[in-house]
Amino acid sequence: MSTAEMEQLTSGASNRIIPMLKTLRASLLFIHTFFLSLILFFLPRRCRRGISESLLDAPSSKKRKSAWRREEEDTFRRRALAEGYHAGDGHCWYRSATFLFFGGRNSALFCRSWFPVSGTPRGILIIIHGLNEHSGRYADFARQLTSCNFGVYAMDWIGHGGSDGLHGYVPSLDYVVADTGAFLEKIRLENPGVPCFLFGHSTGGAVVLKAAAVPQIEGMLEGIVLTSPALRVKPAHPIVGVCSLLLC
Image (spheres, rainbow, N blue to C red):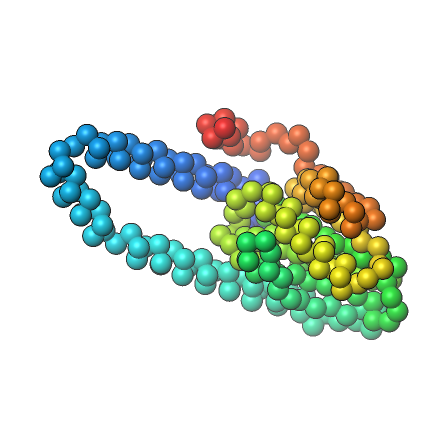
């Protein structure tokens, strides 16, 4: 897969501030709407009626439908790229598959699995990738684990890889934590008696720690594995710190 195609799955470098800017834009839109409503409240009734009618005639609904259609098309394009990533790389000792899992908000989440061809695995590792990554980046790691008789699952976050959602945007890490818990529950039901471990890298490490603190999720785990967990991380760009203060 080319670098350009990889960026369509990852949405660029890990220190991009686009999600924060989208949140800031939404906040500014809210402030604009609030002051517009305040102005309309103090205007004479006749003026309010005329302005309200003109706003209703505006093509806002068409713009929303167009934006939703573009987002859906982008999701399908990313999903097709995710399906093709490392496709046909099967070897004699393992089998791989891709599938969709529907998370807590009924969002379709793109998932992968790698399993040894024969025998019951000694354990299962569920990979939670980092911010602006995708599950396919861990394919080589997963294949090595299958050679040691481990099964591996990986799930793309909402808005990442081949999953539903605005590209590169996660409304809250709590969404990812909830999806991780539901995904873990599904895997345990399909693999009774096999110990399960959560693996998290970078921001995925923070997600795993937060998930493991939930008693229901903790009870389903044999242990967790973390690499470079994103704990007490300083903003990568000064504007992120400023935006965070403004939005708190």
